[in-house]
Amino acid sequence: MPQTPKFPLKERVLRFLASHPNEEFKQKVLARRLSINDDNEYHTLVRLLKELHESGAVDRGKGKRYRHTVRQTSQHLTGIFRAERNGSGVVRLLPPASGSIVIPERFTATAFDGDTVSLVVFTSRDHPEPAGEPPEGEITGVIRRSSQPVVGTFEKGKNFFFLVPDSRKFGRAIYVPSGKTLGARPGDKAVAIIDAWESKSLNPEGHVVELLGKSGDVHAEMKSVAREFRLSLEFPRDVLLETRSIPETIPDEEIKNRIDLRHIACFTIDPEDAKDFDDAISLERIGGDSYRVGIHIADVSHYVKEGSSLDAEALRRGTSVYLANEVIPMLPEKLSNNICSLRPNEDRLTYSVLVEISAAGKVGSYDIRKSVIHSKRRFTYEEVQSIIDSGDGDYTEELNVLHKMSKFLLKKRLADGALDFDTTEVKFRFDRSGKPTEIFKKTRLGAHRLVEEFML
Image (cartoon, rainbow, N blue to C red):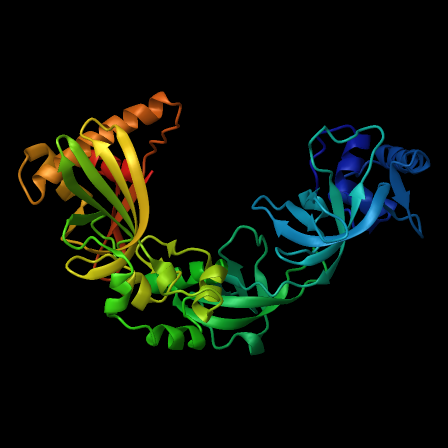
């Protein structure tokens, strides 16, 4: 595309060549690309190119073809390319080298996110890198294409098919030959793998490996997110077989080896739409204005043994991932939503921190024990706040005492220099088909503080 002359000729030449680092141009081609039509300006360009070559500012190949100067480099290296949304990227160097190299957009060549690449690092005695800033470099080749899938929307052009990636890290549509579409139709959400990309002036080529559903469909979009970030929607067969063998009842022998807290007032407080309950709180008076507060966490380690298939899969996943209206769990549902969920009116194995604390929030001794609890009630934050405000409802006395304690604990924590993050959070409401119908700000309640302070 013709370039509008906005800069002096020398700067226009250098800018243009720098933006095409892997291409060579004859003098007449350069003149045309720079919109030079005047004979006098063309002769000026010829003289300028000669001067720039003699000074080392540009390189000249056979047939008087000029190109961007390959700057002196410290060494040839290899690494993994991680693309940024603006077209640039960073290469994480592979051993024996270490560190990161910034790759400006014009020097990324045909590398995609996740590719193993070769590169050179720029060095400049005239313009050294600022202290602490990573050096810049240029990708010189793709050693191995990433197997990372590209998720997007399948479309049809006049004479060809292509996939428009969802992620802005993939800035180019992917050409899909007619025999490699897997039956995808325009408007489908699909997953593709890159097969080849030889020139930055052409689009990459790939093939479709999975169809996710129609674009805009809630479940198709959720699957798209999972595929893009390599989140597993299904558990391996050996993990599911291992999970099935776990009994849902607690053996009497195990209860005998733990402190039995099933008799005390214990309850969970969670969001209204929570599907699993990881923690619970209990309160019992131990004399005068002193209480024993129990903070209970589900004992997952009792069921997920070190070295087991469950353990390995949980390590690979790292955490549960919460999407707008769905969750991709770290553990199978039998564990995450049942055995390891502190559901009301059911015995559950836990780790408990038992703290002696006064009504004024003065902390005394504490003990950490393996325990068994029996939650008496599943509260939402809104229910607890209503009871605190009105003084009427289940476990009113316990909740009011815990609320007052939490305020004392917060005050002391802040006085000791703790940070307090209070940010606005939004939530969604969905219709029966799972489509969002409303976005609203979550109101931060005293009930949230109550839970947070004791968990801290």
